[in-house]
Length: 408
Image (tube, rainbow, N blue to C red; front, side, top):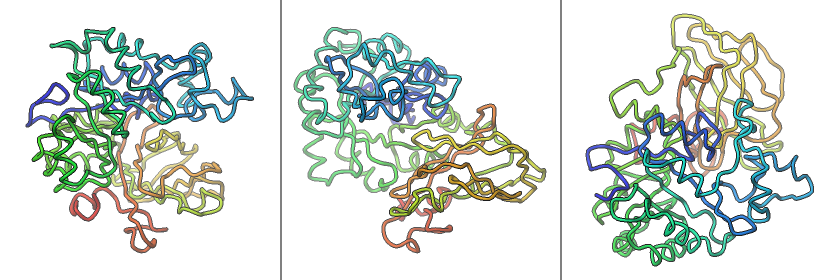
């Protein structure tokens, strides 16, 4: 087995954009936390600035994860490749997530490599090569100047992409660096045999992965590293299916489970029972969106200030004065509405919970401790065919793992 995953028998942990369930994605804070939490790798994204510098950011626009809308109000749609490194360096890349992280900035690839040092491996995604022409060659050229990452015995490094041609271009430049093909579905067996000659691992979407797909990739001689796996039930299913590693927003919780510990040590008797996402075409887009919290303990639990995070780090906060009685429910709605003892409306006007393929929900106490981790899938077809729950919400992961081939 190459350096990109641990030897079979131990599943490796890849921190998705750093420990992004607990800190703003792709920032120094998220990467430092992933190291502290014992992740084996950080998974992150690299793009090109307008002046050809390599910068660490996921989206092709700056709108979601920086204050670019305010700092450069006249520069819509705020595409990363339209800004120089000097301009990107002025942006706040942490305050959108939480005020405590204000002042985090967009890292360059060199800054990231320096931060990681020899403390953790790196899974670097060549992001959106179509809007970053020459990205593969630029990354390869920069890595040649960092022999500590590419020479024999170097620090663990994997370079991946959804774009097979970009991956081939990079592999031609640095053939000794393991590469990973990122995909939604595992390719057909004939394609896998073609990839096996040069690709180290296949990184599929966990929501579309089946146990037989895992077996096919392993039989072809490659590793399986699914994304983005964010609930204990899915983690257990993936381990049983034989994956080599998992990409997750919550590396501490995954590591804890892998060591036979409690993945959510902050649990306080309240769980996410269901997530009802928006249905495509709903107007307004938040109509129907809500999360159902249940108190499974024998005591009332005050959830004032608790919050939920989606996989893309949207933050939904519960208002003050909400106490869930034993066995009781609280429905936390994304949009506006009339509140009562069992219903709280967050007042947002845009969709948060993904209603096209699924999402995950991290429930946190007001102090940030993880209380519960939940993931759901949305099946194609009419709402009544998409699983249990009001509004056609996908079934809970706890139900999914009992029938993995029905849902994964």
